[in-house]
Image 1: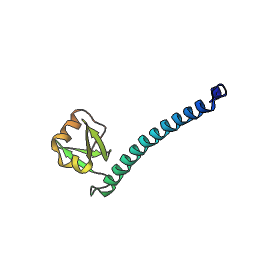
Image 2 (image 1 turned 45 degrees about the vertical axis):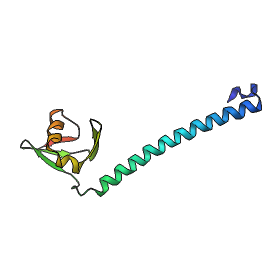
Image 3 (image 1 turned 180 degrees about the vertical axis):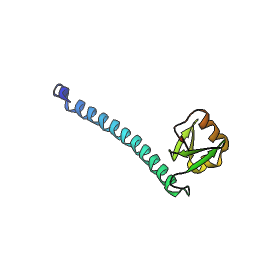
Image 4 (image 1 turned 135 degrees about the horizontal axis):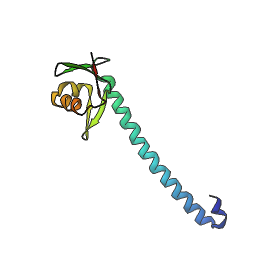
Length: 103
């Protein structure tokens, strides 16, 4: 805003209104992200999965270290992962960070 001394009052007002509109847009986008994260946390909190879920995949045990994640554009939770054997095998195959092999 250092250059505003060369602007007329109307130009300064227009510039400030533009800044305000940009800030409102940014705030709206941030609000959407916060709301989505809040919903994800609520999903996780309401999940009836154990605190440290363990899955057996091809006779090996894996701990689920990420309770909610997105894979191939689809959101998953521990519950949906525990019900989807094909997804479990895919995640093991790609060495996903969602699962950690345990003893």
